Image (cartoon, rainbow, N blue to C red; front, side, top):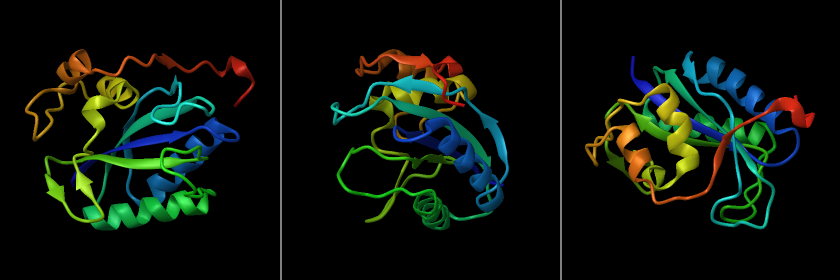
Length: 166
């Protein structure tokens, strides 16, 4: 079965609850979750005048093709209340396809691997936790190597549930 790596993120409402609901729905509609990174908190990237994000990476086995995965995760985002109001804006949930096996694909709707993942510490750090030796099929570098070379200097911190958000 193909291995799929997904990045979950959100910065509105009960962020941990939205991540949990996304994980549960992904497991039933996309495929079983093989591994899940810890949850990390990062200041907003791109559009910085908004609340911090929680992020998590999942490794999922799926029988769905890449376009079916995209359609399904977009539906999951919608069902959880995501509204696409502005690029890089605040959201209750965001689900991105990082890798689908070693597939390299670019269509009008979908680019795999995710075209910005090597530039974003909030993606690489949780990905490195569960797949440090995964090789980027285009850049021919492991996730650990990409993290070392990542130009993004935003702090990515393990999330502490002590903030009252469970």
